[in-house]
Amino acid sequence: MSKVLNKLKSNNGATLMLALLFFVVCAVTGSMILVSATVSAGRLENVKQRDQNYFAVRSAVKMCEQQMLEEGIDYKETLVVVETVTENDDKETTDVVSTYTLDDSNLQLTDPAYAYLKDKDHIRRWLMKDAISNYSNKTAISSSSTNEEKEDAFNLKWFKGTVKDKTTGTSSVASYTEHQSIDFSKELAAYPDMAKALSVLNSELDIEMTSLGVLTYKVYNADTINGEKNKEKYYMTITADIDVPCVSTVDVDVDVDEDESTDDKGETHTKTTTTTTTTYTNYYKFVFNIRDIKKG
Image 1 (tube, rainbow, N blue to C red):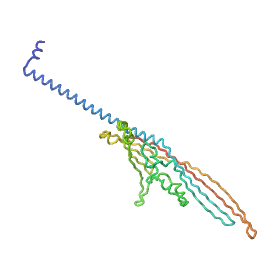
Image 2: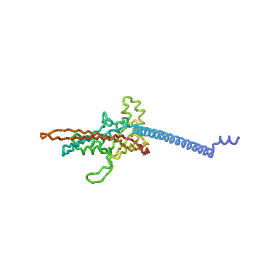
Image 3: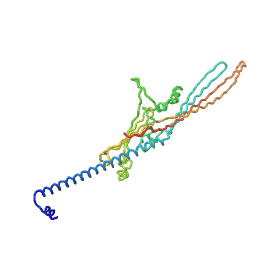
Image 4: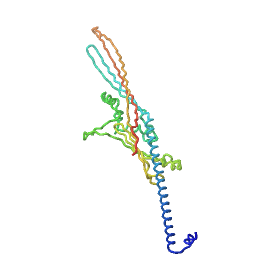
């Protein structure tokens, strides 16, 4: 025991060097612990940010999915063909008049300019875009249109499918694209504290609808959160195939009218008018089938 005490009290160089070495080891070890703790704290912060970004995007995607599945968009087309055949003795004449009607009341918007994601009507607005649908061709039909034009409009599918270029003659798939933002600072402008707290949920959406009836949302985080650059942005894509199944009905009504008359010679003439009214009705309903939801 006395030897240990003597060494502790010793002032020679070997003991001093040992003490310095022990101090250096402790200092290095402490520094390593501090650095490790700092790095771990940074990683935890990054993990928190990544989780926030993931759940924000996932929530927006689920909202898009729910929106598609709950859509109840439909329309009805009616083509009425009235054929009148008049037989008068040996003469026969035929007259055909067609009337086309599009009932698109369930497609119309109260305010077409209003297209925020929270309003389900935005999908209805995209469905009517000229780039991907034949909607404008159907609504262009009027009483002055020919019977053939009315019948063509009735038989037109909603989506254009592949579109042929008039100049090159090549066919391709057309698309309509739009960008939207989910920005709580705008939606909750009257409640700034709530808007700030929910700013982590702000998301961006790149939307595309093709002439084949494919709707795609690419959802990702906003560039900034409360004025600070958003790191670790997350991306997800949801794709849906839009089917437009049709239920068709045909109703035929025949009316025959005979009229007899006597001429100056006392001869009887019979005029027979046969009117055949054929009503073709197509009921369409848009069905959104989720194809996939994936990262990226």
